[in-house]
Amino acid sequence: MSNYCFSIHALSMAQERDISHEWIRKTIENPDYTELREDGTMHYIAVIPERKGKFLRVIINPSVQPQRIITVFFDRRVQK
Image (cartoon, rainbow, N blue to C red; front, side):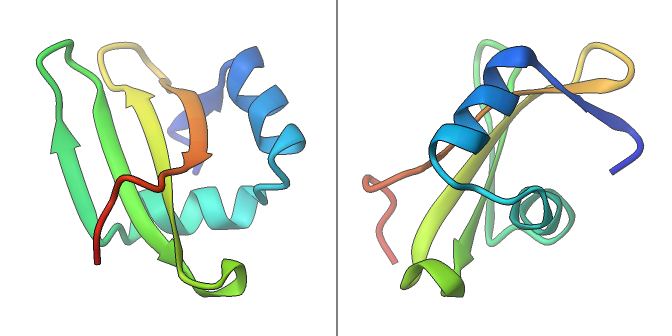
């Protein structure tokens, strides 16, 4: 994950939501889904088995170097 940095918000949300950096790394490196949004952000989505199959969404700004992780959260809207 050396090509990425965390925003202050993403670090805070990961801690508040008990989301491990390992889960974030795995989601970025091996997502189940990706979405490129109109605002230019890239969304990486993956199932986290340790959290009863919840979907983790990691949102990244790919237009800066290193790419910035904007936020992370478990997304209830994603359907299996």
